[in-house]
Each structure stands twice: as structure tokens, then as C-alpha cells.
Length: 328
Ligand code: AHG
Ligand code: MN
Ligand code: MN
Ligand code: MN
Image 1: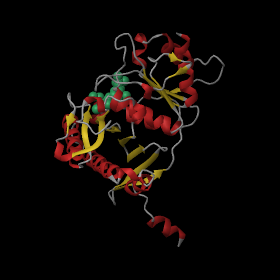
Image 2 (image 1 turned 120 degrees about the vertical axis):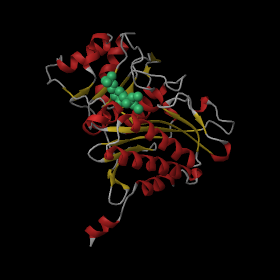
Image 3 (image 1 turned 30 degrees about the vertical axis):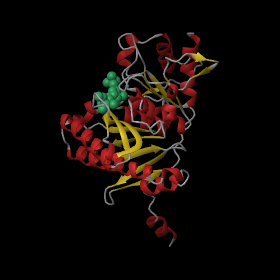
Image 4 (image 1 turned 90 degrees about the vertical axis):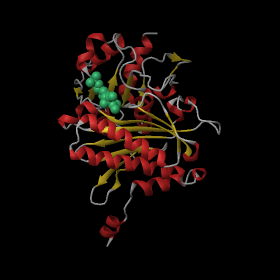
């Protein structure tokens, strides 16, 4: 019967990526093998989180499992983790052509109270066949081949883009497989939610203050936006992606570059937002040649560098870009 056919035609993340990779014959399946090792790490963390491991242990455990899974994939040459001060250079015998930047456990301060947390990752191709150096990971986000996050909440959801749109997969614990549940995610052009830690308002700069004020007291008399802030970037970004609106972690007087890290928080989430029809802006890049640069145009100089970030629905981000451009 048609219903059964649908039920037995399992679109797992592995099958989905294999289909996508037919567009990149040169990758010879390497990317699919890399992704399957990232997925393995996510399944491990999902189990550990649900077992209720405590925060400290989980931070270390998740970092170790991702490093080991990525090295053992034989498809990576440089790994940058939020948890490791130095980059990991894979030994020559086990080296591949991909560089992976990741935050193994994002929102970890929320673990002990059961709020959703996640893993965030981005994938670059090594620049060219030379000995891998840090330059291979200090690339603008525009050069990322793929990016994604896994959210460990009431269910385990993996959201991924390999450069042609965004797709969401939910872990089916009975199968141990991520199944396609959110095909071709597009963020609403405009939203009714803003997401920021209002506790930092005292130190915000002019454009950020004006923008948040306009969310609460719209000049055109439209209804105010709602404030939703979970404090886990993965959860706040996932809600923004599905419901629309804007997520912002601005710079301020105390931390001019904000709090979020460029390589494994700002870039992957900005990549996903642009792929879903939204946009991402850092507020630090000035209007150049009448074009305000995307957050993905940023060229990082240090692997743990931070940047302010404003990302989400196209029209909402446009508003704050205008306020920063007026500051010129
Ligand atoms: P991490 O747990 O990986 O250090 O990241 C925490 C980040 C991010 O998840 C979230 O958006 C932000 O911290 C919240 O910061 P504030 O508590 O300053 O709002
Ligand atoms: Mn983080
Ligand atoms: Mn983290
Ligand atoms: Mn941290």
C-alpha cells in the first residue's frame, strides 16, 4: 500500500547526503564518510545527555568523542574545538582533506537544569595540497562547504546544510538513525520575536540600543516583538530558524567583540541562516562599496576569536544593518 511504501522508504541522513554528493563526484564519498562520523558523535552525546551525565564530565566527554570520531574517520587534517586551546593536526597516516571546527557542547551551563543544549560544527576543505597549517582554518565563513548543529532537547534534531538549502533530521531512537523530518527549511522573511540577553543593555552601543527599543516600541505603531531567550545558542537559533525573528549577541562596552566564537558558533549559524533565506551581520563590518558584508565575509585571525552577531529573518536583520550603516 502507498502508506507502507512511505513508511519503509527511510530517508536517513546518510542516504540524503549520499544523494546530495552525487552533485560532487570529486568527493568520492569522503564527505559522506566524514559526516557519518560527526553523526556518530552526536548520537553518543545524545545518549550521554539523556543519561543525565553532569556538566563538567559532559563537556570533556563530548569533546573527546568528537575528536576521536573525526580523527578515526581518516578524512580530516585539522580540528578546532572550543574546548581545546590549540588546533589538533591529524598525523599524516590518518589525514584527509577536510578541516572541522566545532563546539562539542554549546549551552553547557544549562545542562544541570535540563534546558536544551547542542553541538555546532563547520567544515572547510584544506586550501591546497601543502602541509596543513592554521591558515586552512582561518578562512572566511563563505568558504565553508557545510555547517550544522545537533540539538539535544525533548528530541534529538540535527540541522544541516551542505550548500544547497537546509534540512532537519530527527533521531529515531528505535532505529538509531536520523530521519529527514524538516525538508528544505526556509526562515520566514520577517518574524515577531527578538532574542537577546537584555541583561547587557546597559553596555550596548547606539544602533543595538535603538534596534531593541524599536522591537519594544515600534515607531510605526505595529505590535511589539516578543522576547524569547533560552541562553543556549543552538536552541535560540533553532527556534529563530523555524519561527522567524532575530537572534542577537551584540558587542558592548565591556566586550566589544561580544561573546560568541567566529569559527564554530557565528559562522555555522550564519551559513545556515543564509542557506535558509535569512541573513547574518556582525555590526563591525562597515558598508563597503555600498554593500554591507555578510558575517561570512569576516576573515578570522585567531581560531577562538569572537564577533558580535545579528542573524535571522531577512527583513529583521535588514533593520539593524540600516542602523549601523547610519552610524558611518
Ligand atoms: P558554550 O556553552 O559553548 O560556552 O556557549 C554558550 C553561549 C551560547 O550557547 C549562548 O548563546 C550564550 O553563551 C549565552 O550567553 P549569555 O549567558 O551571556 O547570554
Ligand atoms: Mn557555545
Ligand atoms: Mn561549548
Ligand atoms: Mn564555553
